Length: 107
Length: 119
Image (cartoon, rainbow over the protein chains, first blue to last red):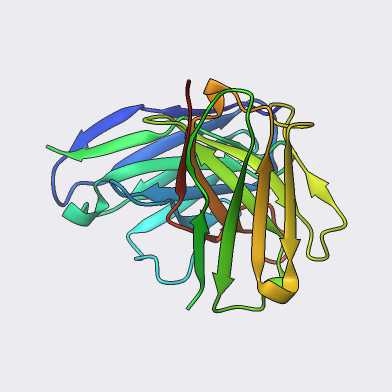
């Protein structure tokens, strides 16, 4: 199985700041990487697919990048509504696996 | 508007069975692969099962293979998950989710239904 390692596990940032979350795959996943946002008490929502494609309706302050085994999610100009847990997921090879999550809080 | 609504969760004893349902609306259900994803309390996400548009192909991780069965009824726009021989480690919120266009990520999720396996 492909292991997905996210870092950091938790993150505290101020409004307006730029934050970056990393996701490392145990093998090359050829950009088959999605990012999800899970707000408290809610189900996950798709943010980005194929490493850097923004899902419909997602604010442009979110962006994804990376290739091979290393990927990142960047949030520019942090807003209060961005407080969430963020998960990456590889969709290159079954079983589809998720990172452990990054909890983003406001400082 | 795409809507997925799960039902059927609850408290069940170890070793027993439970069947979850998901009612879909707002899209042509028969055109999409569908899936179940679970999340143990305060834990991460785990993919549980996927089914093809016709239901002829199903996919599972080793953790549930042989115990869980995913199925669908396209006429009723409904997805199901039959869970047998339940274990305490199956305790989780179970989400119904849609695969977009044969991609293996998930573009819409339901609100989830909680399953607690305990004596």
